[in-house]
Amino acid sequence: MIRLSAITLIVCCLMAAPPIWGQIVLRQAQELPGRYIVEFEVVNEAAFRLKQDRVAGINQLKHHQAARIARLREAMTGTDLQVLRDLWLRQSVAVSVSDTYLSRLRQLSFVAEVRAERRFRVETQGVTTLPESGETVQDNLARIDIDSIWAEGYRGQGIVIAILDSGMDPLHADLVDRWRGGDNSWFDAYGQHDQPKDLTGHGTAVGSIVLGGNASGSFIGVAPNALWIAGRIFDDSGNSIESAISETLQWVVDPDGNPATDDFPDIVHNSWGLDASEGSCINPFTAELAAINALGIDIVFSVGNSGISGPGPGGFSSYLTPAFDPNAISVGAIRADDNLLFNSSRGPDICGSAVIPSVVAPGEFIKTAQLTFEGFDPDNTALNSGTSFSAPHVSGALALLRSKYQADDFILYRNALFDTSTDLGDQNDYGRGVIQTAAAMDQLQTQSVPLRSNEVGFASTDYRFDETSSNARISVVRSGDITTAASIDIQSEDLSATVGDDYQAVAGTINFSPGESIKFIDIDLIDDTLGEAEESFDLILSQNVNVNLGTRNRVAVRILDDETAVVEEELGGSTIGLVELSVLLSAWAGRRLRS
Image (cartoon, rainbow, N blue to C red; front, side):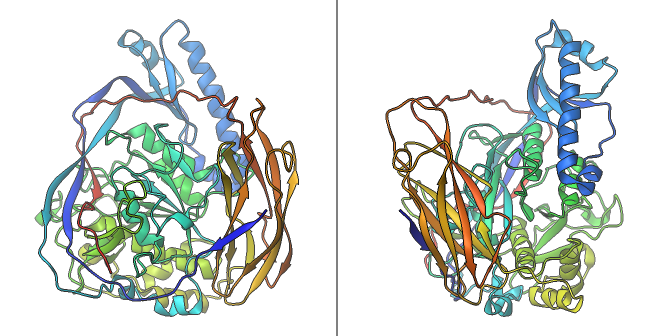
């Protein structure tokens, strides 16, 4: 049995409503007792290895890391040391060990550094309700000039954006059909939720600006045909630890744990930063960001909400870590009148020669998705302000550029945005100016960058569902020029799972209308009472018409038996740490917005 559903995207006006402001601060009061990050004595070559050969590079890094962990355990035999996180990308580990054996650990010849693990606590400060604005139209999307791109049919199709934040609300109508799905599209470093979840709403709000739909009556996302995956860097108690952030960044380069599959995202979005790091030159995540960039992935960071409070003359250089990282695009915020938002962090770069912020985008009274309260209010929206909500415009703009052009060098995308931005004044305030997406698209055309192929394939490389699920939803996506109708046949093929016993057969034709980029296949699963090992079947695409067959034309669907499922114990716990950190999570709790 095959059931198809699709999303249809239409451009329309954006409405406004009473806004709420505020700031989220991540504060660390003490270091985690008995918890440490161990850096091995090794020159980190992750970026170099991945750029040369991703598959071989990841395999080599994991192999060398396994040998180092084995050596560490052997050297610490007879102690209470436990490896909590394997940070193979940066060749380090997070461990627990008592003070009795700490000196022994530090004296190991192959250990370069042992430093305390830090936990960060999220809290909200200064939330204020603003008066009615009286505005009826919100023009943040128009300000970055996307109309002609949408009209041409390019709205982010075929592009995947990783949102690293508080999580995502998968029940929001503007986001539910844009999750890539599968086993490789959600990562919770704390092991608290095995499916997408957001307890605060910040990640949901941020992600919706990148690619949200129009469930509330108006589009809220820059690239509404793109797909999201998400990594959760805050736990249920509102805390975060350094190694969890590092592990989440590591997940980006190999989401399914199989280097042979090409399932990493095109863009990584971050609306967070470290507090008390204004103008800092120390970035604990340098190795991870360099490795991500080496795969041709764009990295976007909010520049910060510190205003004029930095160490530079007159309070400048207030940008936060890691926004200054040379591998990242840092984004400031402007108001509707093109003046800088008062709390947008400034340059100059006191560590190097980068332009900080790189660019600016609208960041005042931006319409965003809000938490649905477990689906009770599926199209809940509100207005938010800050660089957390300006930066997603840039990630969305990059998705638009990538949906039309497939550059051999990803730097061409960011340079196109940089070169065509409209100058608004002092570079330390506005960077190169406000992005102009259509002009950036024109520059790529002038540079004869190849067009992205019109092709179709499965969104993910691997799917796994519990046997008790009523159905398994699989997404098939179309990329490139989608202005014409196209079709593709799909069928299932038994592996260890059997049609009629474990699932209902899939056979039919998927028809894409002009402008459609996503189709969903709902497969009926059969819950039996037998105790069985994990079973699987394949889905196969073939007989393509008016569209090329992509490389992801065959995918495994795994069924986890509920009678023999084993629940693994995950790392948990909560304490509070020592350096103040601030996540540029500006005000998302607010009144609902109705258009």
